[in-house]
Length: 109
Image (tube, rainbow, N blue to C red; front, side, top):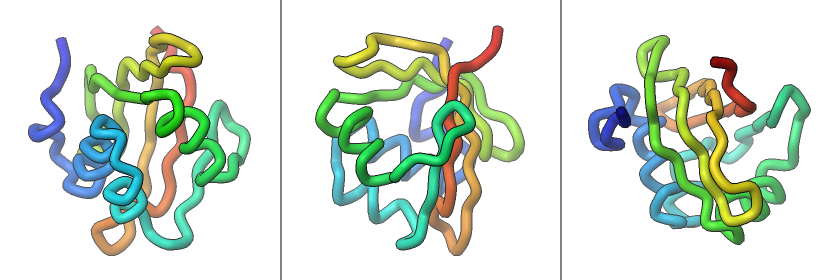
């Protein structure tokens, strides 16, 4: 069962997922603070390079299965044209209504 994006409780995370699923690079970066950072599977990544590779050039999209921590933690099926679909965990930090950091990686069972 998935959670519709418009029902996600944290507005900054909702904007992030909405832009990601629309493949809207401008809206995606508008949902982030200018100095936003990220990690993938525990390794720091260059945010622009990673998002270009994993989201925008690969048709990345998220189907949210669950949210916890007031909407700052998600479990989602993340799918892109490179890797197919995988169950992923996402954790967000929000500052001033925008995502200042996100961490993603494979989700446990």
